Image 1 (tube, rainbow, N blue to C red):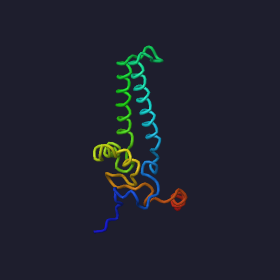
Image 2: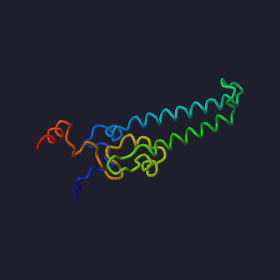
Image 3: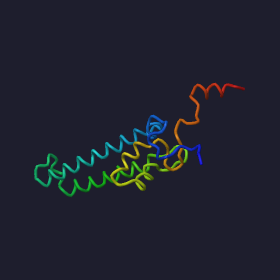
Image 4: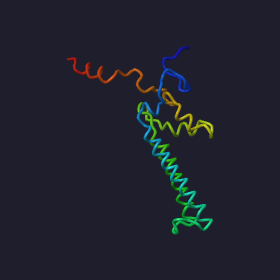
Length: 139
């Protein structure tokens, strides 16, 4: 009836920070966003090349489109393969992409408080550094 495991869907639980932040993986989302900005840059270059006003003459429509698609694929691949649960090693971003609604996966990934696969909550059940250091000194 009552489970000791946290609820993966409880975004308003007792944990104050998102799972991605608590596991130290926010930088992976920043890399993903930078790659998305790169995709937008190639899209702009493609439109400018179609209008024959491209600031980079070597980037025609096809080249810009190819680099845009490759950058988009690299961004999604990076996100899906890099954001992992430290407890169960599951690919959390991939799991969220597969299970969430198309327009909500980004918000859901950012609002997770526990791993959606194993319900591991970072920091729960783990003492602070000083507690671990003190217990390691006891002989």
